[in-house]
Length: 428
Ligand code: GAP
Image (cartoon, rainbow, N blue to C red; front, side, top):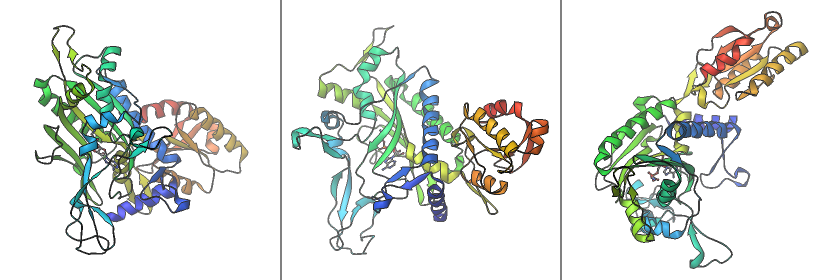
């Protein structure tokens, strides 16, 4: 199974999905850069999420908050004190480990001489402006959620949302993880997509169940086999202090069953907390009944980087010596590739180029005229392009092309005039 991870990492590098960060200087402790195809895949997943959870709904609005917030936010939220992992240091080789991830010996040198566990805070610290003292110390955000609470009053004043409603955001977050690893599974900067769904307290179970189902439906859109997903009910002892119920959605990674997403009922902890600490009234008044209350909140949280990882792992296929990514067409980097059958025949190139330019104004398509046709198919399969369109000599007479399907490797003839509609109907 770990072979699968190695194959996906190799393909990601070879084809420009994901490269090691700062590679020419020897990399930087499990940091990764998204290449030309990776950024397309990641952006397609991001847009699909926004489309589904924000744009198509009447009850969720989006925000794009600053990455650096007033440090009082992180004090109020409990992150400055409590956003920690237990750390143990090996006294022999000085390697540092997360206490909950090792037994009683160092994973590097095997020594059992380990320090007692101490709490290590995961927030990244930096300084705002030219003075580097504690008065200028700030944190890079460790989650998006706090901005949704801090902006709550501005959102209800400026949009027409009424409880129940949600505030969503997507973006980069930073956590100074003790042991990053497993490719993009655990890194020190990653992208999150999450929303806070504000409700009346007596409806929390109904909404928790509703979002639980919606999260499963979303995972299906990434082409993931549902038998690889498992719900893990977090026990009272292991839940965050503010949460009255949390489910982790876990995935069967090649390195074991581990967290993918989280769904938490955070009650009214955050709004009440910010209300007390900032002195601002953060209650909501029902415009019909005049009822004034502090809403409770359900939080579905989706790691974007982990979404990219499971999309690559779960859609990786080998069929003989053919490797293909069975990506759902709407998230594939390219929807189609256009080829002239022979690259040295000007009449074929001209016709194919015309079709390519026409399609490119509407869809994400790519061009290839290198090598033979078999190699070009192989190359598009590997990056998950669902359709390959070849202009050949028959095209010049009949104005039709060969269209080849990634998942079956079967081919059909299709009239050039029908391609636009075909792609429109088959990439959604
Ligand atoms: N606002 C809730 C929150 O931030 P979390 O469980 O700490 O909850 C949410 O993180 C999601 O972020 C996780 O379910 C996972 O998908 C992703 N995630 C967490 N730490 C990560 C890391 N170091 N690298 C990549 N993704 C991570």
